[in-house]
Image (tube, rainbow, N blue to C red; front, side):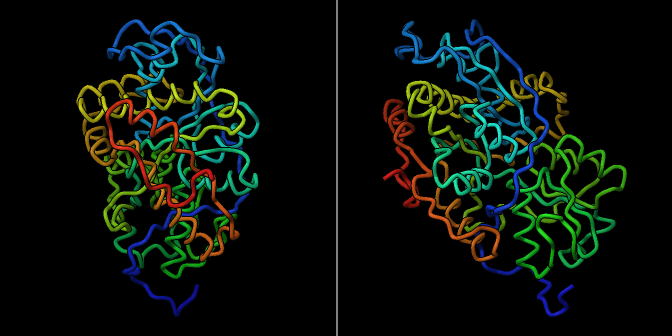
Length: 380
């Protein structure tokens, strides 16, 4: 261990999530096929091509997301009965794939197994960089916040106590994994990023298995998204660091929507229908938070490995996440810069990672403010 290091959190308020140029691991995923016509639930706005019976340019689309609260836009919007994303897709067949973390979703996107996926910033940056800027575009925001470092208070009371401890993240190279690695480096801890060994042991454990690992004493804490963080807290953990504390305004991209460039070029109308569904779902969630909690909980119970959350977990977890159409591009750009400085990412031109033209068209139609800041990384 580097004994000359500073033991305190550095005062600079900057994004610590960064894109590691790490090998992507294929995670276990579950595929669920659903029909795409809706009969019940939230009332679908009228007047769009999909609502007036006009067919879209393809009769099927595959969409990926995670069984996390930070992906509630997808969980709620893609529900079979009343999901607004499904309604916008009309008669187009929707196949969904549920991922544990972002690297597996990028693998699926690159393989053509999914066309569009909800995902965190670091795997998106990594996927874009590894493909030479040819694999994906970020087309919309979805969520901000909702990630924390939670720990066993009997073992860890401060950043200094992390030495020699076992801290979990959902997957090698996912957003929370790179956030933890960056945070440890900023505070002087030396860790082999790929192996997860060093002053602190970083264990990559699927979100669904992390609470059991904590209860069994196999880990001393975890940097995880909601609702896993709140599950751990309900089991006796305490929050050592809310990631929002590392940002000037507490806002940072947690989830955004990406489309494969090939699919976007061939089926822009389908991507537009999905983005419109995202915008309308976020609006509904923000206007109806209690109903949104109920809808999310019911859907979560039906997902692979999912179960309904008790109020003592669901309520604080839901309050920890902001659902927003803004992809908060500046935070992604800052994260990439920090990753390069930390040696986690080679100097990469991220120009073209954003295409917000569809989102802004939808926002204009909905009478909502357009997103003007793409951090200079939009399609030229």
